[in-house]
Figure (spheres, rainbow, N blue to C red):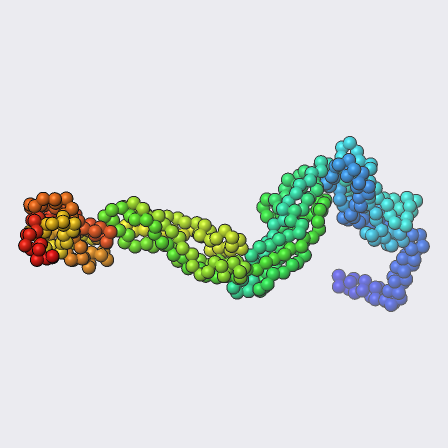
Length: 428
């Protein structure tokens, strides 16, 4: 076996150079023959875009076409090899003439090869011989331009307001496309700004899911929007709650609490100066005998003439709680010297005999109660009804305007007598 293989190798290697030269020459001769004969060959081109012709033919019928399929085609060309080698994808032209639409809403796709006619090349259709359309009625709708900002202004400034020109854009398209539109947005960058600016922004169309909608096949009344942005200064404002009216008799306001105590506002320099640094909320507590709660809209505390003022806090409600409790009770001793006799009838004199009870219970606010004494009550006995001499039991009158109320009745015994004639003369 080994000797047999050696014989074969000897035959192959004998004059090997001449044999190799003969093989190469034969290949070159074959190539030359093939090229001289220029045989038929085929070449395939994929995803050739289809050009639409006479699109206005449907638009004039108030219909808007949307391509379902057939926007690209696959084309195989059969021709002499020299032609096939010279062709590229750009050599293939595919068109769909909308004037030739069928009742089935399809349009035939016509294919040609630039620079060659049917005698030179044979076109073998591949995928998509027809373009399938859906025809929608046109619809028109107006959309207000919503302005959005990106970035943060310089410290101490916020975006006051934005205006767009035009502020409404009319969009025309198919009913299906129009029904998907949620709004039109123009975006302006305010990062680091301390003064207003004007920019030209491109309107962007969004659907219900806040996803951008392509403007293809949509007609907009404006392709751009002029956006003007105004910046406001910020300021911290202190809040205060003030009570109005008197709580129920025998009760007092223990304390008043409110939140927040401060808010951040923004506005023009002029309006901020007029606003000041404090806002007061007035709470009606008339007749209150228990704790009271109020929620006050902070916006209502701002003068309506200050139109630029805006509250920056998310919560613009002032929560006020008025804590109400019974007044303090205190006992004091009364003496005769704590009582004044008033309106003694002419020609008579009065003598205070007694005060009963001597120890009385009073009700007053905490501040008043800690300082009240018998003398501070300024008790009075009115003798205007005592016309004839005698002994009278009269009620002691305490001035409750001073915030003190006597919880038990105090009686004053007074003796009324005629003034002695000699005493009168001596007095004269």
